[in-house]
Amino acid sequence: MKVWREPPGGVTIGDKVYPVIPPSMTVKSGMITGEVSDLKVTERAETGADRVISPARLTGTLRLQNTSANRTIRLVEGRVRFIDAQGQAIRPGAAGTDPIVKLARPGHDSLDPEQDALYALDVEFPVEALRANRLKDIRLELVYVPSPFREETVNFTVSIGPGE
Image (cartoon, rainbow, N blue to C red):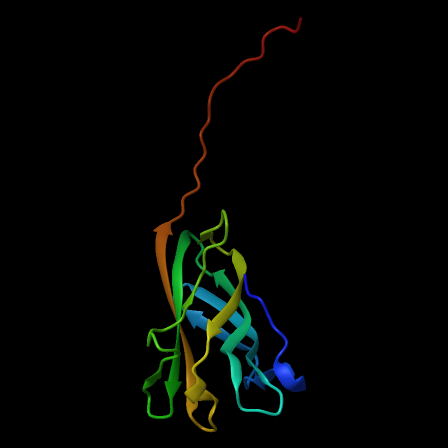
């Protein structure tokens, strides 16, 4: 549980929002298509000061659709990579690892053929990428397991007895 305290001396804390341009785009990877939308970067800082209260986060909505006609896809995870103008990864935070997007939903860890699902995108964003002309691409790497989808019919012989 986070406890917020009022800063001393009338300093106010607010969200600084950076738009991502374009804010939405279509994505395709193998049997998966979808859309990333409502992208923005938000950091919480003291108003009128350069002191950041909480690190920048990339948020948005991720819609994925299984385009296969006969394969179920079990979604494992997604990794977000931030790529600079030289093609090098910009890693957020002190850990130096790429943020992970959780794709499992309670009771729904797979997409059947032609099914789609919505996921919240909320990952740490590298501060260096906020500088002008530093960020070139955002890469979403999806890990999934395709498996054959089969639909079969089972017939069984029955008869109805006399009613009572």
